[in-house]
Image 1 (cartoon, rainbow, N blue to C red):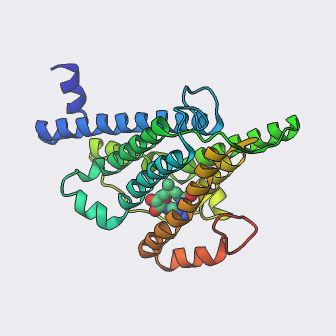
Image 2 (cartoon, helix red, strand yellow; image 1 turned 180 degrees about the vertical axis):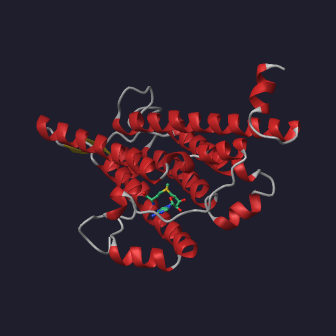
Length: 262
Ligand SMILES: C[S@@+](CC[C@H](N)C(=O)[O-])C[C@H]1O[C@@H](n2cnc3c(N)ncnc32)[C@H](O)[C@@H]1O
């Protein structure tokens, strides 16, 4: 028995072909997760202008009107992919072709690829909108932006990082566990705002000591998209959890901890 056969044998009693497919699905899920992980790390460098070779403020010099059009198209492509593929009607349709256990991984992979395309093709718009100048204030803003990214990561872990990014589903499938039905949760930050991940992104995108026109366009459009995304997501959450989510909306603010409505 080869080592692979041995590993597959320990997974469960199914026929060999099915076990092979489960294992391939698992490897695919890991690959999709790794692509996501590289993409999100790149995103931090891209937005903050740190470490990575191509940032929000570098790249091919392009006339402003052309840069605005290209950048808007890139953000629209990401928004469409991200929102359309997340809807339950779309999921019901495409799981006829994509096996259910790898559906989330495929979504994560497509979202990562459309973001990587955005980073690659993004046109800088270097006009400076604000430059805080004061070094202490600049450090505060960079720290705030990093805190935004920490809020994003921490919130994914407290709600269920591995399920959000598809690893949970492919692992369950591999070991033959039934996928658990979605559960409504309000851990930690979710007691103060309904969307801590999105709040983290907003903070990370806006807290910039030097704000260029390109960065401002990115922050403004993504913030607008977050509000659209929230409306779509909450519509689905009310469908899924009913009164439990309706009452949560009454009780807990959307994005600003001390305000009920927003
Ligand atoms: C990318 S996460 C964003 C979660 C949340 N909007 C945030 O900003 O922290 C989207 C997924 O989280 C799920 N979700 C959002 N709020 C939830 C909650 N309170 N309990 C369980 N699942 C939730 C949605 O159904 C969706 O699958």
